[in-house]
Length: 62
Image 1 (cartoon, rainbow, N blue to C red):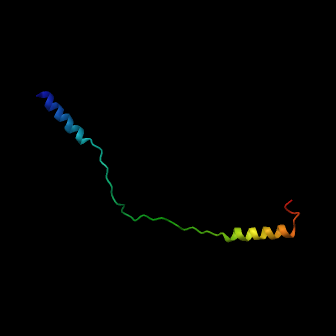
Image 2: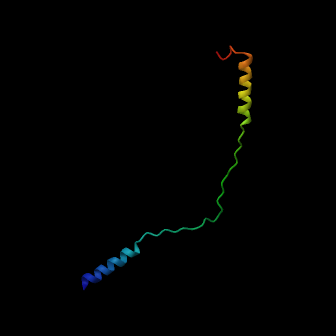
Image 3: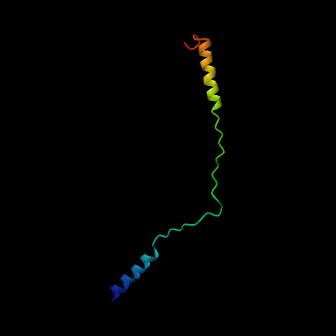
């Protein structure tokens, strides 16, 4: 009888140690900062200028 009660007591203690996961919504809204400036005009203009310079002076770039 003592073994059974000891087993029940140990089982009840193990159940109390079960891990708990809590999922809660945040207090503040999630903010994703998308402040990006994409400027591809500089590259296109540079490529056009390089093509023109290469055409006008073919010996510059070897």
